[in-house]
Each structure stands twice: as structure tokens, then as C-alpha cells.
Length: 228
Ligand SMILES: C[S@@+](CC[C@H](N)C(=O)[O-])C[C@H]1O[C@@H](n2cnc3c(N)ncnc32)[C@H](O)[C@@H]1O
Image 1 (tube, protein in one colour):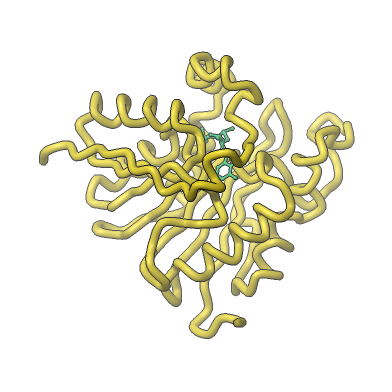
Image 2 (cartoon, rainbow, N blue to C red; image 1 turned 180 degrees about the vertical axis):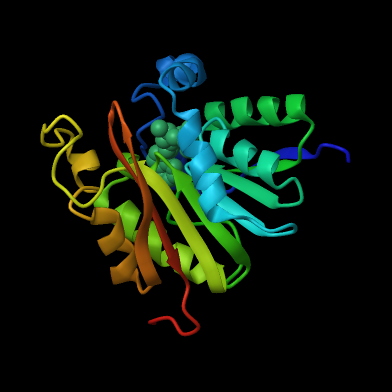
């Protein structure tokens, strides 16, 4: 199989000046992202998310907030027959993801853009996945993400999200989540986001106590009929 890796810029003129919170909080820290997350034992989260998503051969998948491509590449390792697209506003992260995909000889499409405009025609995707990205996105962007995931998924299509958060208000060591963006994920914030958008069967499929905090794995299904 030949590797086909491409980066497409889907940003509108307005989106070219839209701000976003990069992977390490600051753009100059990006070169350390993979070293840092590997040392922090984050890989196991990607493996768990890929296992829960259970992507079938030929499935069409978009990884929202893909960064340097860790979840996309884990999905492709588990299911080389999947058609995976990574979406992120950060061009430098996408170039890193592209280099990693070429080194591994896998095919991956990378789209520069935002979570509230998911690449894919209405009802065309089997899966939307996302890891550690929702806590980087403000309220409006999160609501837009949930709405657009529902639009782009086929009936019965699934969303799988892994991120810090969960049913309680606290981190693992009893401290209240201190960053407002992370706090949005707590008290079932991701479950509420997907339910309010109109997803069915919204549930926490698993959780993981990482030393940086509780990681929740939330899954939901696009129903046959969606609210307009
Ligand atoms: C902590 S990194 C996670 C990267 C990758 N998913 C992983 O698990 O390693 C968060 C990512 O969210 C991206 N991001 C921030 N705002 C975004 C938005 N509005 N839409 C899509 N991605 C966004 C950042 O550029 C960054 O790559």
C-alpha cells in the first residue's frame, strides 16, 4: 500500500485570523509536545480511545483537534483500512502529523480548520473522534463542534471523545478544576454537550485516572432523525 499524506487548508479568510489554544498552550512549545505526552503516559489514552471507537475497515473517520496526529495514527495502526482525516487549526502540528504518517507509511488527510466546521458532507462520516482537544475550545466552539458532528455523521455513526473531565467537579487529588476551559468538561460537561446537540445513547464508556486528572471517554450515536 502506498502512503498518501496531504494537508489541505479549509480555513475561510475570517478563520485565518481566528485564535485558538495550541497543544502546549504556547506555539513555541510545540516541538516538545510529543516528547512530553509520551513521557506523561498519554499514549495509553489514545489506545483506549481507538479500542472504544472500534473502527471498521473502510470506515470514514475525522479526528477533531488532531494536533500532531497521535490519535489518528493509533487508529490507523489498529485499523489500516480506515480513511482517517485529522482536523486542527494549527498548521505546524499538521506538518508534524504529516511527517509522522509518511515515516509510518500510512495514508492520512490533514485539514487545517476548526472543530465547528468538520470536513465531510452531511451524513458522510462513520466516526468522529477527538482526544484532549475539547478542553482547548470555548463554549461557542464546543456547541458548534457538537452540532457539526451530528450533521456530518451518518445515522448510526458514532462520536468518541477522550478528554479530561467526568461526572465530578474535582481532579483526581481533590482539587477543583482550576482552568475554566477544563472546568467545562467536568460535572458531565461533555455528556451534556452531546445530549443537548441531539445525540442518542450518550454515555461515559470508560474513565482513566491519569496523574494530570480524570480522563473521561464519552461515546454517543447519531440518531436516525436529528433536530433541525
Ligand atoms: C492537547 S492538543 C491534543 C492533540 C491530539 N488530539 C492528541 O491527543 O495528542 C489540543 C489540540 O486542539 C487543537 N485546537 C484548539 N482549538 C481548536 C479548535 N477550535 N478546533 C479544533 N482544534 C483545536 C490545538 O491546536 C491542539 O492541537
